[in-house]
Structures are given as structure tokens and as C-alpha cells.
Image 1: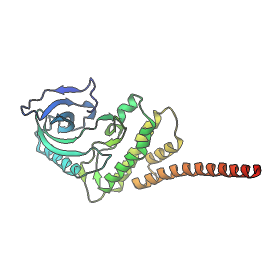
Image 2: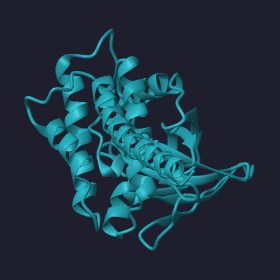
Image 3: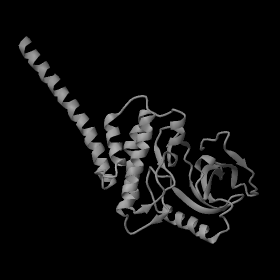
Image 4: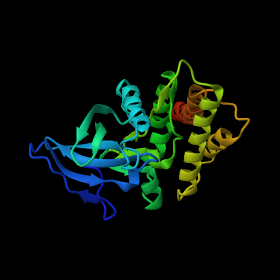
Length: 255
């Protein structure tokens, strides 16, 4: 189940059928027009995204909810919170039903000083994979921030939430640039809270937030990450080969 803290509020739910039980409001996931909940559906935890009460009866916002469902329902990626259905839920109203994230936002992990090397690695790999998928499908979305990045509780896999409010024939250069800048801001904030410095990753993050950064697409950014990792591997292999050559020379002299 999604993390329930003292800030989360259990909501009374009247459902004689027993389909929906244990409804909680999750202020941590609140969005501008939406409230987010976790609830049991047939005994299985899922998450709900529904219009706030002040927008729930407005046809314009109802259409916005329907449109987001239509766009997100067609997305399928292991690092994106998946949408399952659109239903009317007692005490909530019409809501987008998603998989239960069962974890913690990157914002909470930063605030609670619970960052790990695996989380940093996931930002370098899984977050970029999710961003590439979003751009390949021409999805416009709200900026990626530590609040929209979730790490699952057990294996720290990354899930990107709040993806997709419009799908276009193509993304503008500004859309792509904004994604890369958001990525750089996220990574820089994480690096600011690590007990150690990662200078190569910091350089890449700083380039992302530079208005004149060299990355035109997420693929360019992934390539920069791979070159960084490849250079480390190259140095390791060179050192290993030199050590082995020295050992062979030493053994030949002994023989």
C-alpha cells in the first residue's frame, strides 16, 4: 500500500457492495486540480486521481479528466505509473484508477535523508528511459520534479507519476528543452543532499540547466551518460590489462 502517514486522512466510504474499502486522501500527491487517494478495490490497493470538489461539476474540468485518461491509458512503460480504468467511486466521484505506487516520492526521500546509490543510478537510467518514452509518444506533461518521481518501497524502482495531459503530432523544441532542464534540476537537488560528490554527474546536470546546453533530445543525454560510464570502464580495463601484463612479465622472469 502507498505510504500512509499521520498527514493522510481516512475518508468514510459508503459502498454496500463492498467493492471499495479503506479510502485514504493522500495530500502528498495533491495536484492543482486533482486530489489523489489510495483505496482497496476488491481487496487490492489502487490509487485514484479525481477532480477536487470545486472543479468536479464543471464540464471543462470533467473533459480534462477524460482526456488525461484517454492519453495515459495508451501508455505502457515499466517506469511510468500505469492507468487501469476510469470509474465513479463512492465518496470521490469519477476517478482515474492507477496501479498503487507503493513507495515514496523522491521529495520525501530527500527530506528524510534517505537517498541511496541505487536511487541515483535509477535517476541516470530509469528516469531517462521514461522521459525518452514520453517524448517518443509526443506527450506534453507538467514539469518533472522530485514530487512526481516515486520509488517503490522494496526494490527502489522508479515510477514517474502525473504523466500526460496532451498528446500532439510532435513536440516542440521548447518542450524537449524543458524536460532536459527539469532533469538537470532534479539531479542537482539530489546531488546537493548526498554525503559525497559525483563531479561527472554534476557536470552533466549543470549542462542540462544551462540555456545553451548541448542536449537536443533525451537520447543525447543518455549518450552522455553512457560515455561517462564507458570511460570509467575503459580506464578500469586499461588498468587491468597493465596489471596482467606486469604479472606475465614477472612470471616470465621467474621462469
